[in-house]
Image (cartoon, rainbow, N blue to C red; front, top):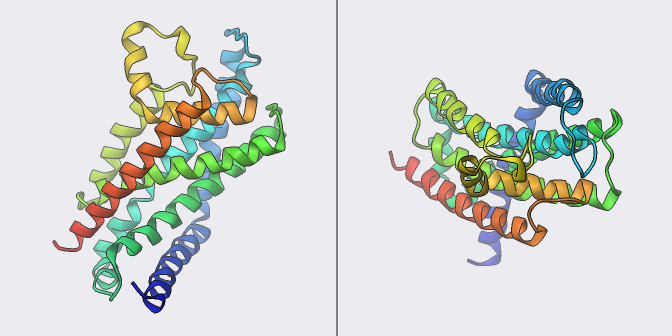
Length: 257
């Protein structure tokens, strides 16, 4: 690939990223809803369960905050796949897939747009949580947490793209998302420590990539984690790489239908 072709491919990525950002900016209900639900969980559940749970690492609301941020990134990234269904329905998907540019770059443009939206929501939630009383250890830790959101978001947007490329209706996609997101969320360390789990539940929690993303954010924000930070980073990096490859391949195949 020569310099002119690379520039054209990067322009394609930027154009699709900008399109996703404009769509996100215009959807105010999506922005408000994506913040309201996690904050409801954090404030209500954090206060209610905090009075009943005792953690050696500190307050329960502090422990819960990274899990709520992870929940927001999970939901936002997976729902990024909806744009593929919309684009297929209105014919835009065929138009961009016949463009003289590799479909890998086309998929990358849509993925970066979805990940950016997820990062914005996660970052806003992180700052709002700090404002309402969650104690973070440092500003560099918060910046590192944003990087972790990016890595996590890539993995889940790749998963969302892979699923959306094979699902023809919004209703079917919503059903699959509900089937995936809540089991992944509950079978993670978002709401409870890994050491307190029964043995039968410990296995899916340790196999869940969301667990390692949340533990990495918990380490960066609170300085504590049940999983070594290098292990968490390795797992979410491998997971994200695999999902982006799968999502790009599925996106490519979707254009051949």
